[in-house]
Length: 512
Ligand code: MCA
Ligand code: AMP
Image (tube, rainbow, N blue to C red):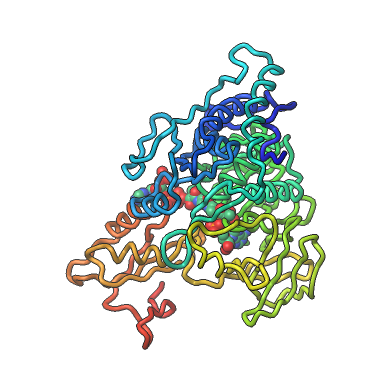
């Protein structure tokens, strides 16, 4: 039988802590009971939305949906009205899973709601011995998951921004979740003995699939901080956590905090593995962390549509600035604008072509880690693949002479990576244009030491004498889309630079 979570189907880890959020935690036996009971209720549901707060309930809800073979659609609980409306209209969930007491926006009011019970009761009931608990939990889990036989069946629909238009729902099959987590286990020597600490949001691949489902697939433990803080990271690493996952902004904040905090350096030095991903970690932050802690930060490279593609290996040398080598099973090639392949790797790791460390090409990948389609968007799905079946990532890279992938940029300038979140310039522009005080709008990313890039907007106001304030425009975008998409800077212009065809010349927009 194809099982995503063998550790939930009984065995020696029943009493091990599976999940901990703050002072609430569940052992494997308790998780099997909570998620198993919920999974039985979800049987036959269509897609289910999950109100993805950083809580036990989100983890239990997603695990239950996966056990039941029902695709889960994680929702950012800070989604604004327009974004939430789009995601619900596109994914048409049959019900929503939320924690008891969560206040849901009216857009979700029409859906059946199930309150997720994350209880420390086990299927065997109070006072049972570990053996009995395991047996009872196993029964529930095995019964519900047995019905889901197809590894190609959808596990999750995760929304991700493009350059224009609203976010697209990437349909991620069960096979991809298993393949990517097992490949990472190989690259990182990741086992059930590892205890992961993270403070990432649970509505994206990084925090949810890698950060929650990853430890659960290994039979290990995860401690979620609720929200990221250097103190929380230090506390957990001092209390036995072995791995840390974060976006570069989090490592930047750790690097900043290291200066006056030798205790933090000591705690980070205790970690077996510090892993960064979702955007490039600047060299300066790599260097500061290594100098203070004696630990290198391992970078891995992924994408919502592909899950993880490459990583620096735990048994290899950490080379700042590279994202390592393709994970087992992932084929990767660099392709020039005219379609010429520069070099790459077969899925079994065999090198193809010469790695010169100079020739830049688009990273294209294939493998069991890939998504199936963009929901309701056959046009976009077709456009994402080459004629010979490789997925176009849009990321530009070189292959170093030692075979490491070095990302050097991105094909689309209209994609912004801020704090590790992908944001489309088009969606921000469309939201700004809906503000009554805005005549014309352009958005782009600007370098930012903390966020990697920050969103900047250029506005031509309807009334130059009384333009809307920058705060008002930021609030407008935050409440329509999501707070992390709000412009951090707004510049007011009399007109936008345009070419003869009327297209905005983004390179000609005034910058600092
Ligand atoms: C501020 N806030 C506002 C406004 N201004 N809310 C509404 N309207 C406003 N005008 C609130 C925010 O909601 C937030 O609340 C708080 O003020 C601080 O906001 P902000 O400055 O935006 O947040 P931050 O502290 O700077 O966030 C940094 C961060 C965050 C914690 C690093 O960017 C983050 O969590 N990034 C992770 C992104 C991620 O997981 N990416 C993975 C996707 P509050 O603090 O209460 O929230 S990529 C992926 O999955 C691929 C596969 C991969 O490779 O990994
Ligand atoms: P998302 O669609 O939000 O999943 O973001 C995927 C994108 O994040 C990739 O296409 C890359 O541009 C970027 N990314 C992820 N990991 C890394 C990394 N380690 N270094 C540089 N860029 C990264």
